[in-house]
Length: 309
Image 1 (tube, rainbow, N blue to C red):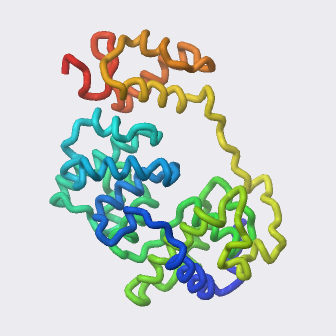
Image 2 (cartoon, rainbow, N blue to C red; image 1 turned 180 degrees about the vertical axis):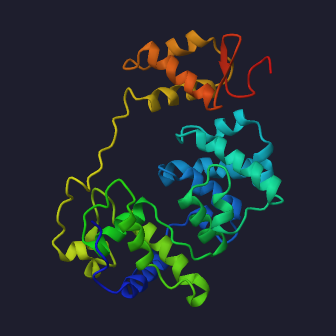
Image 3 (cartoon, one colour; image 1 turned 30 degrees about the vertical axis):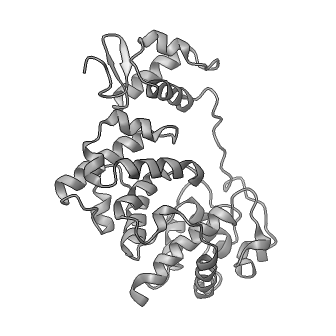
């Protein structure tokens, strides 16, 4: 259970935001000249994906489709090719659908409020709050995996927050959030990104660098002796080999090379010894159902890339 903060959050706010001003990574979507669309693209790409993999894909995407209208009208096959190996390619499809909605309902401009953003296709609670905050300075409570971990350790004395974003954790995030009406919400927005950066760089899940943490003297978990996670707090990652995600990714990688191979030839050529033919067929069918591939006359291609289209 997530306990209420044992200390006033104000000293933590001051400590982490001051640290962030000195330690923040220079990322292109954080620059002042980055458009709200660039922020939305980055937040979509960064879901369950490390910054190192996102950077080149984001830069290529923004070079080719710098505005929502560009993405809205781009061939889906090209979007999926630039998406490359970021994983979860449905995000590219949802990003195009969001761009189309922005063009249709918002005159091509990314909406500014979390409620308006949440109404876009594929935009969830986190992404809506993050874009409202980081692109428009709206003091929304932003909570990702890194922030949850920072909250759990500093305020609740827990090693890990667990897999589920619980109602108690949601209340804790609101309780420790800076006053959104103070200083135009600037502190609140900086707090979000500072806590996120601390979780990404120092307060990591497996090997936290507590000796480098600016909030070490304030951290309830460190003060308690850094107790190990309970069974309830632990998360167990799924093995990659042999999963449907691996098979779907291999099929998408093959389709991105171009052409329209025959269905059975495509499936048999995949270098996946742990995946039998039934699994390969099922994964291909799921990609077609998701709109990420199409099959015409026994041949498979990215959407719109089939020679007969």
